[in-house]
Length: 142
Image (cartoon, rainbow, N blue to C red; front, side, top):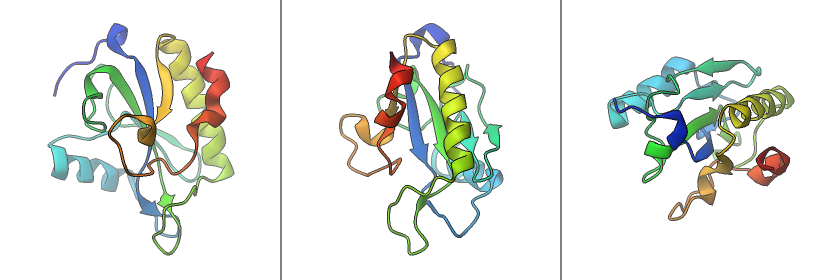
């Protein structure tokens, strides 16, 4: 795994797990999916439906979540992003919204030079991940 240096962090990228809101997607499932696809876990943090924030990768290790941005970003993933029929949707629970806000606030304090963006906000990304408009956290970017 490659190192990530705090002074290099320019982005805090929010993702969804791409899992249905009516089917739990476990921490082990998230970790194993990353390992199967990329040889390591993809994300630094996972925000579960119940609001638990689970550290996955140390912040000093590069994730594998956004081509061209892994070397300069911290990755946060929330459980969900698909409705019960498999369509893209903002499926965050109120507990997730609160936990995500608090986590992003802390990460911005730790990395004041970094901007909070959704995966779909990065150039070249065509999928709707994280399935909501991250600009709702715009005040954290100021």
